[in-house]
Amino acid sequence: MNYSQPYSPGGFQVMPPAIKTIILVNVAVFLLQLTPFGDAISALGALWPLGSGNFRIWQPVTYMFLHGGGAHLFFNMFALWMFGAEIENYWGTRQFNMYYFVCGIGAAIINLVATIGDPYPTVGASGAIYGVLLAFGMMFPDRYIFLYFLFPVKAKYFIAGYALIEFISGLGSRSMGSGSNIAHFAHLGGMLIGFIFISIKRAEWSFSELLDKLVSIAKKRGRPRLHQQKKVHSTVSDAEINEILDKISAKGYDSLTKEERQKLLKASGKT
Image 1 (tube, rainbow, N blue to C red):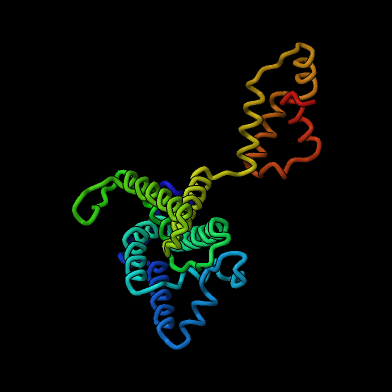
Image 2: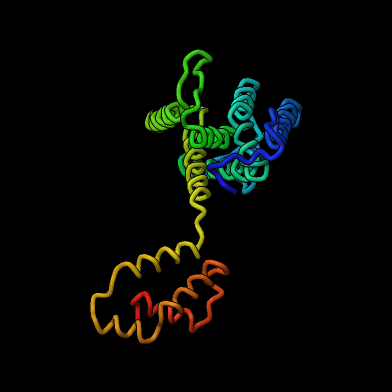
């Protein structure tokens, strides 16, 4: 999956499948919170701090579907649709789902570390949605976002400003012990995990490509001693090395035989 080029095989969808499903599930869970079972659902599903005695292993997932009120739910879902629809259209539903939950769970883990000793639980999809916001800024850095529907701001500056505000707010709430019900570090955590995720995907890291680069660097470094140069050329020819590198490119490093790996090491001057 190319995280720099559009996917969108079936044309742009105003309400793509993942966004639609996430919104419907969040609304359904919120309606359940309004029933007599609401307190039990919140107690079991909210993200409780470590050491509180209420933390459960499933909470880094379930907290994303609970909200503290109608306004909290509305603005989260509106932001998800506003920024996430275009991301899902570009990446595809499967990749978007993976990204959304990785950001949400990653935000939960960072929030757990940042809130050790606090008595307050965390609810809401904001951690995952801030990851989506970060993705929008990385994919469309020069796209204009209208702040308060009036003031045009480029996405890259909008995202950077939001991150700075969250960081300052998070430090302030921790230092003052305010007990704020806004999980600033969950928001920052979602953005951080999103940045790492997209960076890795864009780089398309793999062991074979990394090895190719290391071998290329080793070959360009030169040979400091004449007798080493003679030894390499006397045992491994350039044609053999080219065949081995072609094999790595086609089938990966694991496909090499023991003898081929030894030849590669000799050619890189490591024996």
